[in-house]
Amino acid sequence: MNVSINDVTEVDKEVEITSSNDELTPHFEEAYRRYQQSAALKGFRKGKAPLSMIRQVYGESIRYSALDRIANDLYRAAMEERKIRPIGDPVLTTIDYTPENGLSFKIKYEVLPVFELGEYRGVKVEKPIHVITDEELGEEMDRIRRSNSTLADAVKVSGPHTLVTVDIQELDGSGAPLVGRKTTDAKLYLADTSIFRELREKLIGAELNTTVRLTVEPGEGEQGEKHDLEVFVKQIKDVILPEVTDEFVAKITKGKTTGVSAFTDELKESIRKYWEDRSRRRTLDAVISDIVGRHPITVPESLIRAYTDSLIEDVKQRSPDRHLPADFDEEKFREQNRGGVIFQAKWHLIRDRIVADSGLEVTGEDFERFAERDASVIGVEKERLAAMYRDSPQTRERLLGDKLHDYLLSVAEVKEKTTNEFF
Image: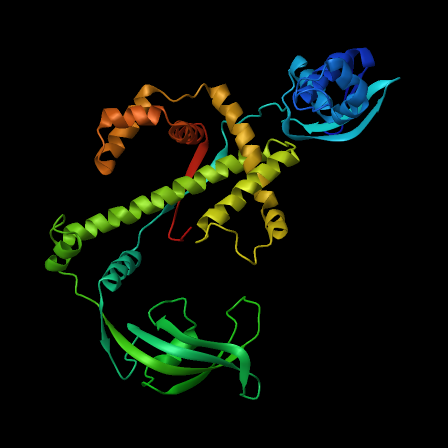
């Protein structure tokens, strides 16, 4: 058997294999025996016809029908002998067989890219440190108050803390209703800053069962046209916010926290942890982006397909009926996510090399600490939970990922920068 491998690209290969009839004989004999097991020749019970008669009657047909299987066997043997590990599905591009010349075929396959691990230490990044303001703390307290608020019927919109149910009709330039451009029973909480300013201003002071007209202009720096709207007020409910008292704190924390001051401190600490997590993620993303940018890796198409298939499966699993939405455009989805998928594929190839280079590994102590943290929450004994975690590849991968992230941040050059901005 002669084997010739051609490099199409860094990751795309084509192998050409030729095999003489003498080399093919054992494969053909195996094909005859397989066929013999189900063959029914006149005068013989099923599967009992002599192999010589199988060759004489069906030999040529069996040989030609077995060629694809033989080509696959020869291809795999060639890959194993050369310690080549293809990824994805190989593609048979040409195949030719004659009794005189034997079998000749070509198969295209892909391999993972071979690359040198570049420098991943000393990456210079900026870590945003969010400064919590009194205004932000107050907004979070108001959010908690709103989630514990009560509603009271009203006949007039008294202020922003009002829930208004409206029908919104878009109008043309002459003031006539545009067909198909009506929204009914829209519920608007006027304290929500995402509501158009013009709409909020028009509704404050409006009475029940009245209509207001307004024009919404594009915001500064935004593209688009202005819209003329007619808004009918169908229902008004005042949102009554509870006062923040010691009794209120005890109620919403089920007695775990006593006193407004202690609750405020806990709330501030919760906000601080939120921004610390966001800051860590932002900094880590910057480190990873820098490292990936240093490695011009060619990602095999089969890997891109596999990653995108996983994203599509996630979309399917999030759907109520576990099916893709009727209007889901798979081709468009694959194209839109291609850049992100390639980035993730590159990073996963690089991260495996960094893990090996740095000697990172998950130890028994890591499982113990993880189990100790989760035991009281899950309600399982720590020792039993640790044993379950040790047998879980997903848990091992998660812990390894956490260790890698900690390591990357520890070897990066991180410069902190305080900011009041949200990120």
